[in-house]
Length: 457
Image (cartoon, rainbow, N blue to C red; front, top):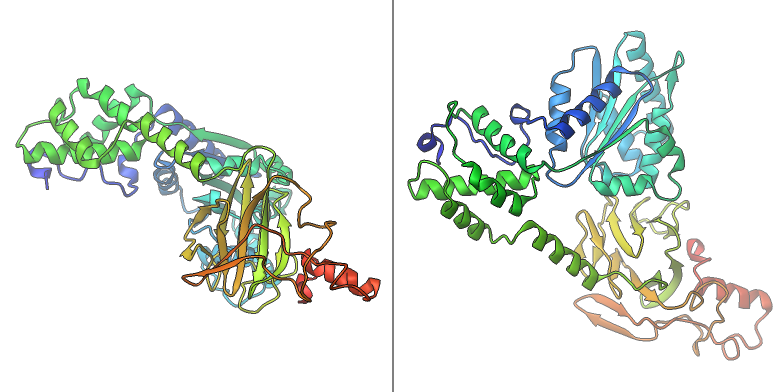
């Protein structure tokens, strides 16, 4: 809309990644060097993290464009995959369609392909964008892949790029082996204020602005930085809107008034205010106070099938028996969902399941922060997320207490198809229900309520 008015030949601040416009700040140059080192040196594994919009994807594009034909690259950016799906996607990147193959067959195909490339003198690189969404099981597959060797050299080098959650996952419990495989780690910081001004000028020049002209006077730099914190994607959004406002007012460059109009149009507060607001919302929505215990209560048709403490960082839910919460039902995917717990916060992820994962009737598209009382729905099963003050209630070893012959929900409310389960525990009254039962039958009842007989129910 404003290109001709300002003498530009291309959109300078488009949001889609375009390696032609890459500005190599000091941090971006270092991250690029790490990626190139990984590609050209055998037995390398690098992890690059950065905030949303920091330029990770554009950087990947630039690195891959500069490679020659002796490097074979598999780039995966859809990362909400189970292990088999991940291996299928990897082979598809190499031109091998194996969507009906089992895991053993997939690994055999992959090994054969890597051996062929090694004999041909080619390097093979796996690049995973948005790697923060990879489940622990898929990360373990990546670790095993990075350890494949031919003639004492790694058959495949790995570059993982993702948001800061990726670094926290790698530093978590159970990830020591993967962390030890990583040779290089780098966090891509936002641009400094001076770098941000150079970034704006660079993109305008690449878009065709003649040398010596400036559409954003230097006196605007501080205000732009105040609202973007030097994050490239936010800078692009604000600068594009400011140019539009200046065009509407028929200005030759962006003025402070045009910039303020753009900020008003975007309805932005300062970056620090937005950050504080997000923190307040997170604190309000979740996390449980220190010392409280989060757990999941699994039900079917108002009957409690089991209770599970969120005692480790990652727990998976699915049909296969190796899941932490196994639901032996064909309508549930093999690996349906996972619960990631970091500190006092728990998130639910859908693992690209067939029938989807829902929280309070709303589909989980990427991940969802859980709040006390949230109900996760997986087909006909309801899983309530609760936060308890004590460890012993309703878990293994607690004495059952129900006055009917079956486990039941103490209070249930049906609202728009959602079962809301009261936080009270479903237990069995050993004095009434189990009176006269054998000790074996009593144990079976207790185990059913405590979730240990779920896979056979």
